[in-house]
Length: 88
Image 1: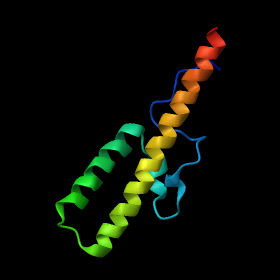
Image 2: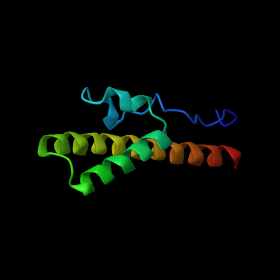
Image 3: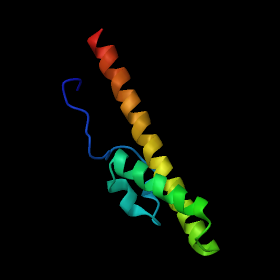
């Protein structure tokens, strides 16, 4: 309902890339935690100090983190649209 506050810790109702069996822990991250970890993953990949196999794992984790962030933002946008429509 429009009077309920927007959840700030995590989204449970959004199917996310993070639900992949390879990275189930991502689903429990807040948007900020996932974004910060994604920044770290990108920095590690760009450093060139990670081996090929680890790079591939980091890449897949980065994609799952990005998917989690995108889904979170899309649900936030939809919630704001719903609240705006309800208040008119």
